[in-house]
Amino acid sequence: MFTVTPVRQRTHRIVWNDRAEIEFQGAMAARPKNVLVTGPHGWGKTEFCKEVARRAQVTLGREFKLMSVNLSPYTRFEDLIGTNYPVNTANGVAIQWVKGALQLAVEGGHMFLAEEITKSNPETQARLHSVLDEIGRRLTITERGGEEVPVHPDFWFFANSNPAGRGYAVQRLDPALQSRFYWTIEIDQPFCDERKLVEDIFGGDENATVHVMNWLEDLRSNAETIIPTRDVSMFSKALGRGVSPESAIEHQLKPQYDGDKYARIAAVTKAHFGS
Image (cartoon, rainbow, N blue to C red; front, side):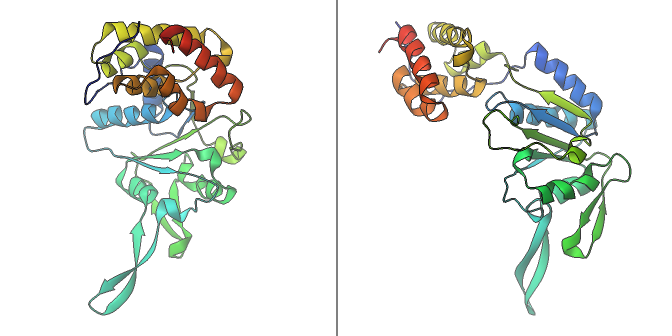
C-alpha cells in the first residue's frame, strides 16, 4: 500500500548522471562556440543549460549570468536586443534606449539562452547570424541606425528546441543558422539521477520512493507510456503534498497526453497504487 507523510515543503536537488557529465564536458570544451540543445519536452534541456552556466562561472572566476528569452512566432528581434522607451526627464518626455537580454549578454560576456528557437520567425533567425559568426562576431542594431556592438570574447550563445516533425508546433531551423552551431546535444532520456530526485521530494521516505520508481519502470517498459523526468517530478511533488495518485495524474498528466496514452498511464498507475 502506498503511503507518504505530507509535509509543508519538499525540497529536491538535481544529481546529474554519467551521461549528463559527458555532455557537460563536451559543452564546456566548446565554449564559447554556439551550442544547440534539442529533445522532447520535460527531459531537462533548460536545467542542463543553467548548470552549464553555473560551471562556466566557476571556470571564469567571475560573475557569469544566464540571460534567456522564450521565443515564439511573434517574438520580434527587438524583444531580444532592446527597444526605445519614453522616459520623463527634467525637460519633458524623452526617448531612451533600454537594452534587452541579448545586448546585455553580448556586451557583458554572459550566456544567452534562446528558449524554443525553432518557434522563432525567419526574420529573428536571420538577424542572429552575425552574432553567431565564428569570426568578426557583432550585434547589429538597425533600430539604432545600424549600430554595431562588438561581441565580448566570453559571450556564449545557447539555444534549445523541441524536435521538428514529432507533433510539436515548431519548424526546422534555417540551414544558415543551423550551420552556426558548433555543438549539438540531444536530451531524450534522463540526465539526472531520478531516484535521488524522488527521494529528496519525499524527504527520504524509502517506501514512497520505491513505489514511484517501480511505477516509473513499468511505464517506461512500454514505448507508448514513456514519460519524461519533469512529469515524474510533478507527480512526486503532488503525492508529497497529500494528493492521491489518481488525482495527480488526472490534473498533471492528462492535459499533456492524448486519450490512448493517458488511459494506459492511468491503468499502470491504478495497478501500482490502487484506486
